[in-house]
Length: 201
Image 1 (cartoon, rainbow, N blue to C red):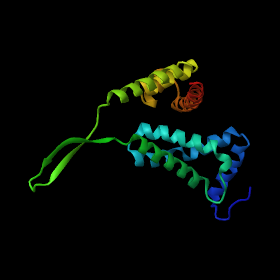
Image 2 (image 1 turned 90 degrees about the vertical axis):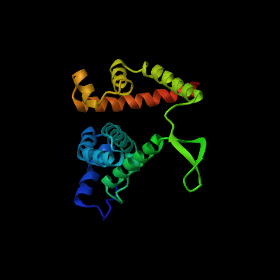
Image 3 (image 1 turned 180 degrees about the horizontal axis):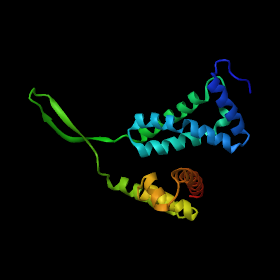
Image 4 (image 1 turned 60 degrees about the horizontal axis):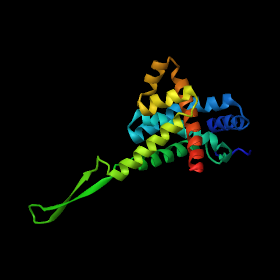
């Protein structure tokens, strides 16, 4: 691979790690993760103001970057490419999490005689939405039950009991890094299981 002339010394060092990672060097993956995990995390915290979501999105960003490593070209720094993946992933997450606003039928007149409608956040689901959500939860639980025991326990604690990474690490007496890494693997397995489940429906 030809090194871009515009790369800094840091960028060239990263490129060497990328090349090693492409060849399956796990230490190179770990070095890239260690180098950029905190900067990516702090960028995401600023974007979404939620520590746990930022942790999840950080892991997702690295997962996507590492899976697409063959697409990276040294025309620009690896860090620039990684941060772009992380920010785009975060923007998608924000779009999905947006609160739906529903307009009430009631219209009243203000002091100037203008007709004004009331917009309120809808905190309740209609019967169809509730049924769909219940079906999704049921399907998710069925898929989670097919995970290996250690992954199943991690997913249940994180997503059903909504425990933080730190709380899971304390409860299971595991290093925090191990909890994060295994949850990342568990999400990969879940995604594959969900895909296979959809294909058979």
